[in-house]
Length: 299
Image 1: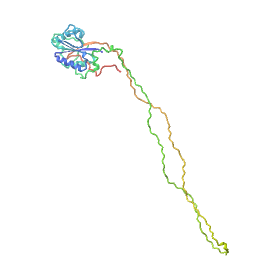
Image 2 (image 1 turned 90 degrees about the vertical axis):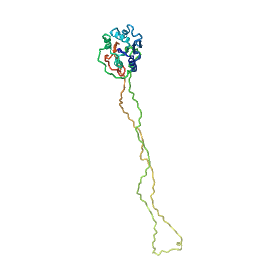
Image 3 (image 1 turned 30 degrees about the horizontal axis):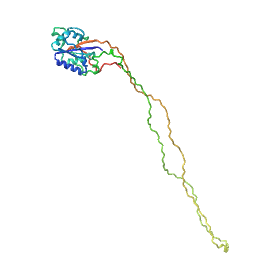
Image 4 (image 1 turned 135 degrees about the vertical axis):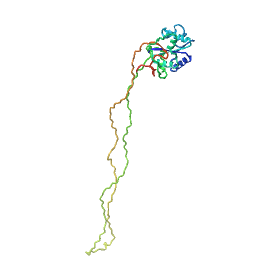
């Protein structure tokens, strides 16, 4: 991941301060921001006086006619703001710097009788169009002055995770059967033959002149009893059926389908770091929009 130095000049110190304030609000690390004025420098990039010989060359990587323009502008009261930022965040930083009316570097160089020479690795492009105003992601901003990822220590790791499907079993109530007994009464009828006896008194006249003696004149009696049958009802209970409950168990094979997650890791070779300097004027090189999240390995 290459890193670039973005430079902007402001004739009004208030404009420079506003630009620095917006950069910090966009989560650009303060250590990546420096301002250089007649009284010296502020920020963490350098602590050398702004007009000391060789200062601009140490900041931009070499002497050029640009350094003379910077030096004369600072001497006349202008403020130079520099920001070191990863290349993919350059567009966002340039948009913030241009928001606060930086001076046109070409016009300033022409007024000093010099011709601008750029030390950037990108070609000049038309005036930038407005870009999104979302704040710089914190994770991405913290990489502005960080050592490139190629020098990361062995403690930096990415965990490769994988889900595994586990299938268990649980009992589910599916209902069943209940047996209960109760008594009902049903009318029935049966035919039976009954025998009935009756006693009748019969009188027969005697016409044969039969004689009797005194002994026949005595008290005597006899009787005859009659009977009749009547129906006698009785009940007896017998077992005619038995009902019980029992379980029948069967086994079945069921296929369970679901999805599991796992992480994949792609390893990419990161190119060597190239430091470049970009001058933030109204004709700065176009840059890609700031990504919504820091660049990370594909997983």
